[in-house]
Amino acid sequence: MTTQRGQFIVFEGIDGSGKSTQSQMLSDYPVSKGRKVHMTRQPSDRFVGKAIREVLEKRQVVPPQSLAAMFLADRYDHILGEGGILSYLESGVDVICDRYFWSSFAYHGLDMEIPFVIDLHKEIFELLMPDITFFIDLQPADAIARIAKRSAQRDLFEKESLLTTIRQNYIFAFEQFPDTKIVKINGNQSVEKVHEDLVGEL
Ligand code: ADP
Ligand code: TYD
Image 1 (cartoon, protein in one colour):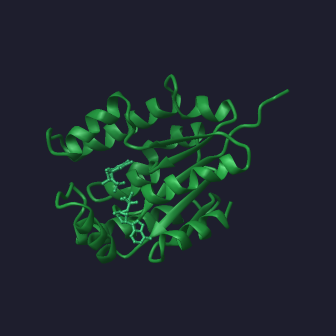
Image 2 (cartoon, helix red, strand yellow; image 1 turned 180 degrees about the vertical axis):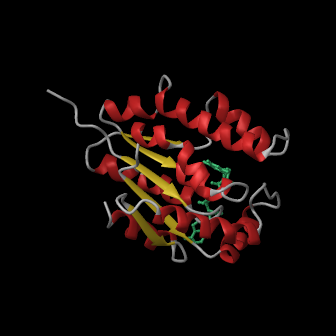
């Protein structure tokens, strides 16, 4: 008997849009259908992902091009490495990932041309496209208000004007992939309503 490959479900959105909250809530859904689920995120919790967090948390400084390349390196390892995403999918487990390559297009698009960043990912597209991407859309001012409630510490990208450009970059990047399933969800609703909208798309 051949195992049916798992579904690869990706969450995207600006910082504070509700990705972590919703990906956690959605983790029960495959289980309710008798499927197994693996939760993960990018930057990953692997070797390169940990180095990226050093930069995001300002303990290390690297040029923006290096950071973009680190995310690409992390992505290869996260997909192909031992215990990586492909190994789960191939054994029939659904994988829910908090951020994927769309984040690179949106965030590194602040420092370089988005088509260039997309081009760097050509081989990744062959390795692993999401089966569905949920874009939780929230206005930057609302996201900032949520982040401010969550903690006083702001990381690199948590500023309103940057988030505005990042949101526009997401929209531009999605337009470059008309054949890919990307579902925009209104993030400015209760946690329960956002969840209901997401499940309605699966
Ligand atoms: P992200 O992972 O996109 O940064 P989080 O899921 O961490 O976002 O949510 C950011 C903050 O907003 C958290 O404090 C969370 O509890 C809160 N939050 C998430 N979803 C909603 C919602 N629909 N309405 C109000 N607050 C929310
Ligand atoms: P994280 O703490 O996961 O933020 P959040 O809870 O808001 O998702 O930090 C991830 C940060 O890394 C976030 O600001 C977006 C950024 N990022 C990139 O710049 N490029 C990428 O390819 C990815 C996946 C994330």
